[in-house]
Each structure stands twice: as C-alpha cells, then as structure tokens.
Amino acid sequence: MADTRPIGVFDSGIGGLTVLREIWRATPSESTIYFGDNSRTPYGTKSASTVRKYSLQNMKFLETFDVKMIVIACNTASAYAYEEVSKQSKVPVVEVITPGADAACMATKNGRIGIIATGATVGTGVYENAVRSKAASLAAEGVNAAALSDIKIFQKACPMFVSLAEEGWWDNDIARLTAREYLDPLKEEGIDTLVLGCTHYPLLTKVISEVMGPDVKLINTGVAVAGSVREILEKNDIASDLVDPERKFYTSDDPNMFEQVASPFLGQGLPSGTVHVTTDRYEV
Ligand code: DGL
Image (cartoon, rainbow, N blue to C red):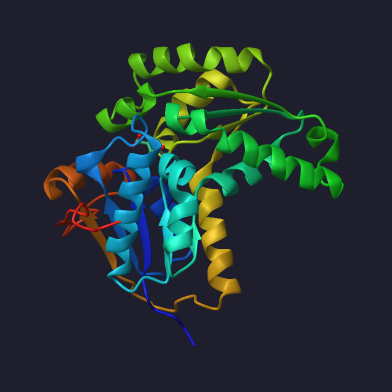
C-alpha cells in the first residue's frame, strides 16, 4: 500500500532547495516539508556542537509532521550531525555526503578528485573519508579499478560561494574572479571530477564549469541524493502514489524574505505560503 506521509527536508537556509528540487524531480508523488533555518544560518562557520544541536532541533520539528524520512539537505549538518540525528530519529535519515562521494568515484577516469565545500565540511574530512572508502570497495570489486586503486583527493573550502549564491551573483565578474581564485589550484592538480560539496554551489555551476573547463565533471550532490531517496523509498516499500502531493515550507526567519531568495532556486511562484517557525524551543 502506498505511504503518503511526507518526507522532511532541512537545511541551514535556502541551499537545501537545490536538493529539494532534485527530490521533486526524482520522486514526483512525494509530499515534502522543507524547513530552512534562515535565522541561524550559516552553519558552515559554526562549531560542531552548535550544528549538532540545531540539527537535532530541526529533526524534532519535522517529526511533528509524522514524516516517513528525513533528508539532511546541508553538507555541514550532514558532516557534523548525521550520526546523532540518525541515532535519535525514528525514521530513515539521508545525508548528502555519501551519495556525492559515490557519484564522484563512478565518474572519475584518472582518480584525481576535487572536493569543494564550506570550511566546516572540509575540516571534518568526511568527504575525503567517504570517497576513499567507496573507492576502496569499488576497486576491490573491480569497478573503475584503474582509476580508483590510487586516488588523489584535493579539497578546498570556498566560503565566499555561499554569499555569492545568496546574493544572486551567479554569473558576473565577481563570481568569476572568486571562482578563479578558489579553483585555479584544483585545476592545476589535473582533477577530472569536482564534487560540489555545499548545497549552494550548484547555483554557481556556470562559472565553476567555465573555470574548470569541459573536461572536468561536476558532481551535483542533489541529484545523487535524490537517487538515494528514491532507492530507500522503494527498498522500504514506503513510496507515495499521490497525484497532487503537498509541498510545504517553513523558515525560522521572515517568510517573505525566504520566498524572495528561494524563488530562483525553485522556479516562478515558488515557494508560497511559507510559515514562520522556530525550532530552538525543542529540548535536545
Ligand atoms: N547549507 C550549507 C552546506 O551545504 C551551506 C550554508 C551554510 O554554511 O549554512 O554546507
């Protein structure tokens, strides 16, 4: 029987919408509840314990909707809080790091993989560990073994990309200069695959690919995450069959501001009816 309970998705703010739109595309019958913690964003500059606390509070809020799955649509929260959230959650939890790392291992031909993310995500080393562990298991199975038996990983924190994305500066000279400053060193390392390890970065795809050139494959983790969501729905037999699923939005800051900034991520007229809510009242 179809399970029409919604999927809960949270992010530090608007970046997770790049994941949400891919979930909509991959699983169009699913109702979704999105929570953007805009009043406490960014997470990428905060400590592990703060991000863990915020993430658990966000999880508790989403659980009030009887969600059937929680997607942590934020790389920083995934890096710092996935373990704790999945331990405490009553439903399956999907993080955004493993699916992106897996996709990078399948994409590389020369074994040289770049990872760009917030300083917090890079600092935890979780992406690097996820790529190394996936590469080792694939190589052992003989999958893409020529590239994966001796992988080289190059990481770079690109904090300014978050502000550029939120400002709507996706395709101007400042974005281009910033991208060159961050990415030229990765290009010089001869990487052939670059993981966009922060939810905001897909908005800058045009300038990032201009700088990296046509031979470097960009991994949009949102697409990989949506694939994982679909797999888990099918495996647990909890997929929905709704023709007109509900798509609700909550923000911890001003709903009008949220909708203005969010609209270019999701398309004309979306989101609408966003409700203000705070999650700091939840004891964790
Ligand atoms: N959503 C965050 C991430 O993917 C980026 C924005 C922030 O620092 O909160 O890491």
